[in-house]
Amino acid sequence: MSYNPDPLLAGDAILVEAPLVNRRLVMGHLLIGIFFLIYALLMGFLYSLQLTGNYPFPNSEFLSAGKIGLVHSNVLVFGFVFNMLFAGMYWAIPALMKRRIANAGLGMVLLVVWTLAVLLTILGIHGGEAQTLPWGETPNALASLIAGEGHFFIADELIAAGIILALAQFLAPLTARGFKEAMPVGGWFFGAGLVWFLLAHLIGSYGYELAPGAAGAVFAGVYISGVLGLTLAAFGWGLMYYFVPAVLKQPVWSYAVSMLGFWGLAFFFPMSGVSNFLNSAVPAFAQNSAVVFYVGSQLVILSLAINFFLSLRGKAHVFENIATRYFYTGIGFYAVSAIIGMLEVQFDVQRIAQYTEWQQSHWFLVLYGVFGMWSFGIIYDLWSRLMNKAGWYSHEINEWVYWLNVLGVAGYFVAGVIGGAAQGGLWRGGATWVDVQNTIDGFWQFQGFMIVVLIWSASLMIFNMIMTNMPDALATEIADVTE
Image (cartoon, rainbow, N blue to C red):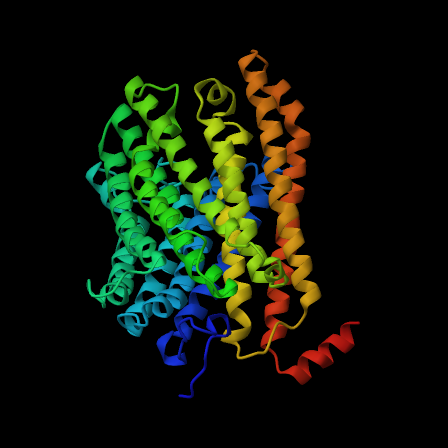
């Protein structure tokens, strides 16, 4: 196979030969991730109709609004975000380490296992077998069997198997050098993230199911902080330490801040889980310490974000690259999320924000505004090269997609915070459910419209991807017909 250097890694950086990166696996995870993105957004819009009193299936148990909401969040996390992160890792890890993944066949098994886990999650939730674990409602057959209520939706077990397969796949290139050479910063994040993922999933999912009362809440906190906090942060920052320096053609501003960020996340995040259960029956000392650790974790995220922004000095032209814009937009949203998060875990603020649209919108900002934006950056950076094209079909469509995404995320988040503050304040004041509903109905309608904007954006992106993949002559002919 001919030598095919990666344009982003020109100059003194590592050059990627085509055989080094398994493009079929990158493509597989990208396409499946995009499919689940559309599915998750459609489920999110359907759930928004329930909030505004327009739900089309009010008497259906299988399609009950509560189940639709759980499907939306779980497919967004496991179907979209993790598939996109795996796609990025299949490209970035071999490039960073100059080593191939362990086995292409193992990669296909991982792809199938992960897809099956997401599909069983969808069916299991609709079938009434969801776990009560926040953000981890993936059905758990083993824990259910131990509890005497067995079912065959083995989604949690398949996720665990998928994590083990990912460990075998990616640790091979990450550990191939041994201790003879220094590990790139991104490699630290990737390696630790894989280990954290497995531990957090097993401890959270099974510990939560088997531990009673407040102890179960502690395990749920481990799951939330470990999978949605630590693992996603590790994979995401690892990818940024590959893609951003490749675009800038220089290292990130400070290696010391980068390593402090890595160890800071490792130290603070695992102990912050109970911050999701403030003002609850969990012992006060655990709640207080969790707040301290959570604030520490968010300060670490801020330091990493500042480190990347300081790397931009004299490099403003890089924002002409649409992928770079997505990367830095995600970093900016991560900084906003960290500031909001530190405010949100203060006990007085939590009494207003907890279980309101504020809290839900904060999570959406993290999942879609940060990891969604980074995922789109990966798509825009890799797709034309995966298709062996010089560039995208339409730069204008790319611009529309970017700004629609920014509008959708920012609009959804701002409406949720304002509406959630009003919602929590009314509850604290003793207002009735009907009064609260009438007050924030307009915010819910606006959020539903923002989801439509995001669906529109994703549809335009898919159209541009299809046109980019077409032969140039055919794409030009279609463009002439549609004008």
